[in-house]
Image (cartoon, rainbow, N blue to C red; front, side, top):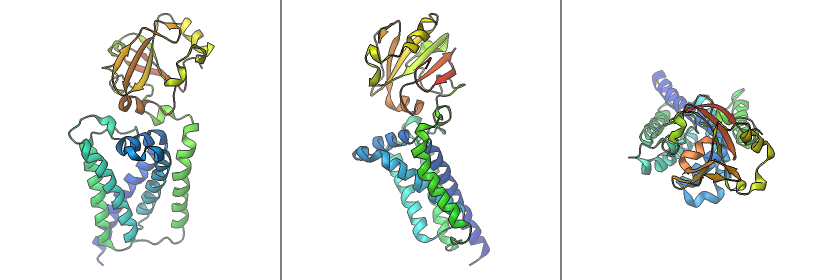
Amino acid sequence: MSLWRRIVAYLGVAFAGFMFLVAGLLKGLDPGSFASQIAGDVPFLDAVSAPLAIAGVAVETVLGAAFLLGFRRRWLLAAGLLLVVVFIAVTVPKLGSDDPTGCGCFGNFVVRTPAEVLMEDLAMGAGLLLGFLGGPGSSFRSWRRPVVALAAVIGLGLPLAAPALPLDNFATRLKPGATIADLQLQEAMPEMDSGTHVVIIAGEALDACQDIPDSLFTYTEERPEQTFWLVRPSEVLAREGATWLCMFGTEMVEIPNPVARPLYRTLPRSFEVVNGVVTRTWEGLPGS
């Protein structure tokens, strides 16, 4: 077999392997968001979306490491192609939409439209097809086995450990320096373009006064000049009420789940905005 065929085959498979590895590791930082995407794309898998997300991270990580090491057995290439076909199948129905929130192939780190995601998937598929030109590639001898085994350990361990690690500013789109436009909140809360605001993203667990810690009351009382917001994930965009949880003057806003989900790993999560730019975040309530 000619050298150029082996080189082309390796480069194609290595490209796909790099994409698999990066995608798996990034999604592993926020497996909850990946599980939500699985449930949204394939509703009948909702009940098992959490374990599927962990398994998916592990599979992508192992495939990525194996392909980068030059392992090109036909069954492995076929497994990679099957995964790419699944990616394409869930992306095609979204074509025609410019909303980037529906595509989480790289977690919350890279924002792309469905058309851009489809082009990436097709490129990965083409790379794997090139792999069939160059023979089986390197075998799992010597140091290659431990590297792939390490990838498997990381692929399983990362999504299991990540929720307990302080990674919110890294694993979500909500981080200091982000603008309300970056977070897609300009339509729901245009007032945040100016002034100082504190936003709390919360779920059902804070629907009673006794659920509010004293530290939050103290924090709000010491900052009368700030506007406080409660943001709650919902199926629709809506604004209601001017009072929330015994804290007068707090605005309540509901925003669509696809917009809210990339902003947190667990609820509640809070952040401060000054003149439309995030300046501080909390993994929990302000003042906690």
